[in-house]
Length: 169
Image: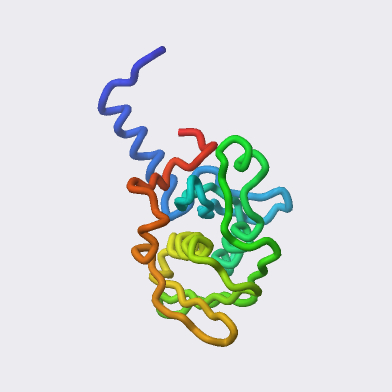
């Protein structure tokens, strides 16, 4: 194995990092249908605590809705079997509406969510820089102000958000 001189190695690393730019991640690009995609985190439960996994979604203005749709799909069979990931989102739950305005994501589902499922939603939505908090709409009533700090009971002492399971480092 050939070693690069220190200065050359630093220059090469800087060029690679500059080329990455923005908030896109390795693996972002084009999906099977030829549309632009990006990686997002979707939060499931590991031993009752939120934990991120990677999902690819279409690069659209509705990327938060796409992330929630991936959350509603639940963990993959591989994630369930190898990692014991679970979801507290009730089966059959559908996204009714989602809008983001002034840092608040206002979201409604077809089914009421238990606390652990709400934590999954809040973590999934607050990964985006345009979302600071989540307002849940249930039966036409808005419950504002959910943030990550509200779910310390379902957050591990150390939450590793990168690298996510099955990602190469």
